Every structure is written in C-alpha cells, then in structure tokens.
Image (cartoon, rainbow, N blue to C red; front, side, top):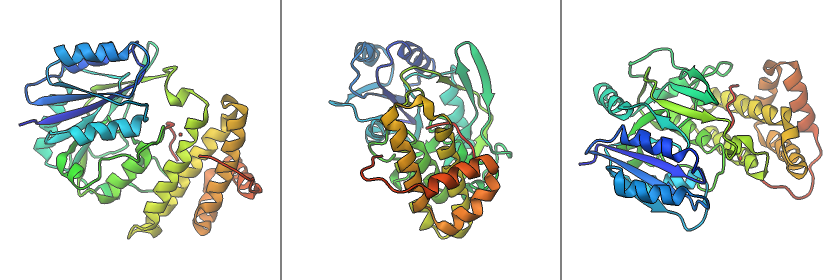
Length: 332
C-alpha cells in the first residue's frame, strides 16, 4: 500500500531540479511514491527526470505533450496518486532529509484532514523562516475558523500547497484539484476551498521545505500576461465564497485580500510589459466593479488612504473594449 504520494511538477528547471531530486531521495521510503510531472520542458529537465525515473525509489515519470501550467500539472499528478496521503513540491524547491516521514507521523497522530507547516524562504544565500499564520500548534482545529479575522493575516493568506500534507479523503471529495490552466495564483481558490469545506486541520512547526525565491523563470518574476491569471483566480474565490453559508462573514476577507493583491500589482506596474500594464489596469478596474459593492465600500476605508485612493480611482475607470485575463506573496 502506498502511504504517501508526492506530486512534483517540473518545467524548464534544469539548474534546480538536481537539488529537488536529491532531496526526494533523502525522503524516499518503500511506501512513498514521487509523481514527477514534466510539463513539456524544452531544456535539459526531461533528461534529468528520465534518469530519476530509473534511479529514484518510488519515482513515476509523467509527461505532458504541451505546456499546461502548474495547476494542470499538479492535477495530472493527483489523478495518478495512489497514496493515503498527498503532498506537493515544486520542481525548483527542496526538502530536508526525512521531512515527509515526519509529516506522515504527525498527520497520523493528529488524525485531521490536513496539516500546514512552516517553511524556509531562500533568496540567493539568504534564508528566512516563514511561519504558517496559525497560533495554536499540533492541535486539531476547524479550518473555517482560520479564515478570519478579515483585517489580519490568516491561514488563507498562506496558500502554499507544498507547505503541508493532505489526507486522501480530501482528494476523494474533490477538494485537492486546482483550477485547470491557471498560470499563477492557482493556490488561492484552492486554499479557500480547503478552509471552507474540509472538516479539520492542524499546524505543526516542521521546517522541512526550502522555497526558492527570485528564480528568473518563476512567474512571480516575469511581468507578462500570464501574471494576470490572478484576476481569474480571485474571481473564483469571490464567486464561491458568495455562495457559502457564511458569505456575510467571509466575503469581507475575500474582497480585502483581492484588493490587496490588485494594489500590489498596480504598485509594481513598471515591471510589466506596456500592453500587459494597460490590461492589468483595465482588468483590475473590471474586477473591482464585479465585487459586491456594499462589501467593497466597507473594506476600502480600512485599507489605508494610499491603497484606498488607488483602488477607488481604478473602480471609477471607464471600461475599455476588449480585455483579457496570473501567486504573489501578499497579505491583506
């Protein structure tokens, strides 16, 4: 029986994949499988993965015939997963030895639907510990309660799929798949759905994931049109949350977070290509007009004068013909 399935998408990460694969070997167990999803890489990544499929215990190589993006690559791995537990890792990050064994032991001990963990953020030679924003540790909690309060950083502002482990019953309930085709922010609708619909979770202080920031091929570093997928991602968060039984309580948090991400992108608009910058403004204006007006009116004054002014100006922006449709590390 497979105890743990680890879904690991790769796309053009030949510089970093050796560290990732070496760390998987240091986590291998006879009851673990590693689903290596090559999202149609065009560099040396496929050759590295072919060798890993031969040499890494538990490795299963899956190839996409065309590039589908991170969300769809993760879904491909999920569809093939056989484990009692599911975990994720990105192809340019790495793990401490034995990390997954410790997570499985913690999850079995607590018996909850999913665990969230801290991680180490790595930028060049600099490392910083990032804590999951859950104060009570190693204690089973209600995920819905961890969404609020709206004005503070909460568990839904820490969306990283790889910072945790998930019981298979969530996969069977349809709660672990990502919105197909999203190039970025794919984890935002995902984490919100988990916290609205799962029954239990816990946070543990396991520091075993090393998250590599500043990678030149990462979409968080590239100012092209794919970044604008955050609009579609957060539209989904708003749409689904508006249908929730606690919509009146939860929508202010969803709207505030969406506004914070829009403000972040507008504040760094110079990194976008000119046409993408124009589309960013148009699409952000449309997103603000689509938000529940009464909730937006409640949220804006609490966001500070500078951000509120920027967002109000966007909201008043006249719609343009045409349009288009992108995760950034932003808390509300």
